[in-house]
Amino acid sequence: HQVRDLIQAEVAPYVDEMRVDALGNLICRVGSGGRRIMVAAHMDEIGVMVTYVEKTTGYLRFAAIGGLLNQTLVGGRVRFEDGTIGVIGAPEIMTNRGSAPDVDACYIDVSTGEGNGSGAIQPGMAGAFWRTLDQRGSRLIAKSMDDRIGCVVAIETLRRLNRQTQNELYFVFTVQEEVGIRGARTAAYGIKPDIAVALDVTLTGDLIQNNRMDVRLGGGAAIKLHDNGLVVPPQIRDWMIARAEADGIPYQRELLIGGT
Image (cartoon, rainbow, N blue to C red; front, side, top):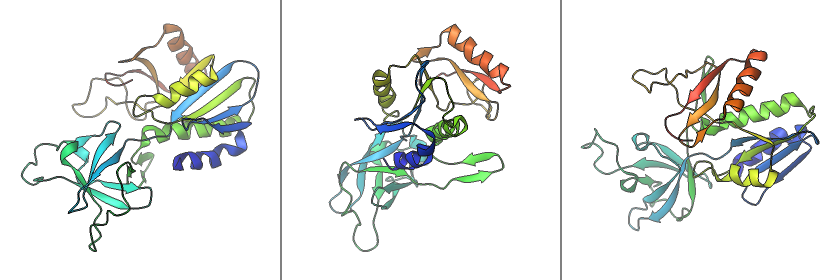
């Protein structure tokens, strides 16, 4: 909801109608008549949820919200909604340097030096990873680019359209993608679009010893062809490629090995 508030302020001047559905999706309509088109990008990010507070230490045990990368957990910072910053630790980390600890072994330390600091944090509270956004040339270095960058693309599209369309466009900023693509599915049933386009990130094949994938950073928009949950019809593939070529938009063909 905090990210949703930020997006609402950004898009308000460029939409004809804006509402939040029962699940929490932000649905923005532009224009009426013509084809009904839905463009979706998800607001949510991978995070953690507190499951238990250790009585003596105040350490917070937690569960994953979405697909955590265990290799990056230890030493990572987590921010809770009340502003509390915690650091993730794990036992015997110095003697087990060669392996990533299981989530069940990790804990979040919110101690203040004056008591254990966990008083305000209760089971059920969610936390987001906490890092800065930095820029190096044309590269952005940040957490949760999945899928805040898709939200940026949708916002910029609304800005450039400036309400000029012959169709009925629905820009949907969705919830709960990381735990099962729930928000987009709910929104699509409500909107019933003729065409729907999902904006999200993908993997890359231009790293040393990386997946053999014909996608590289900076190579243009990646047009989905296939992944574990979707085989894109040739008509859709050809339509998107023709549109990109006609407008001189750099593009790549994306065949994703994991995820959907």
